[in-house]
Image (tube, rainbow, N blue to C red):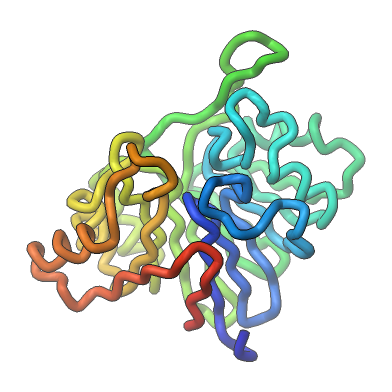
Amino acid sequence: MTDGATSITWYGHACVEVRTPGGRTILIDPWFGNPRSPLTADAVERCDVMLVTHGHHDHLGAAPGAVREADALAIARRTKPAWPCVHELSLWLEDRLAGAGVEIIGMNKGGSVDARGIGVSMVHADHSAGDWSAAAEGPLYLGEPVGFVLRLEDGSTLYHAGDTALFGDLRLIGEIHRPDLAMLPIGGHYTMGPAEAAWAVELLGVHEVLPLHYGTFPILAGTPAALRDALAARGLGGVTVHEPAPGATIVR
């Protein structure tokens, strides 16, 4: 990584590592067990800020029903990050990570906190959350889904939408936070697809997009090429659509 630059590495699905101009490492939705990731969770050596957008197993980083031992928790026990998260998830984490030295920061949509020098704002996402609890033989409620806006040390701003449908208040997120780059799901079926993601780009006013949550399984059929076509159809052909291979890095 170039000194003073920001690097963004996509590890497949919604799993992203951001290395900041100030030398911090941020992990978002760290499912390193996804079929496209070239890195395993036990190979992660550093995490200063952990972010999980919602309590589904493929974002905490686990097989269905196994979130109690998810990648996010194992990495946090080892690296002891600050972990801003929605209130209900924070309560669960305080129990699961008791005594582990993790700085759990419970918050909610509309709030902003400083996490190890990184500004973290929690914003709305239109999706579901929680997962199956084998121990309780029923759903495990882990709060509502969210997105995160990150303000880095150099003033640049990144937006990770998490899993979401298209919603009109993306325009407000754009107007309030002015993200430089948006990480948006495009797979369809469980989230918005390319056509809706192109509309989200217009609402946000961003000029760079990193597509997420596609290609992990055949049902997540949206593609960056389809997103480019949808952007062009909306008169947004000048927007940069990044398409790194899993494990590859964007430096900006």
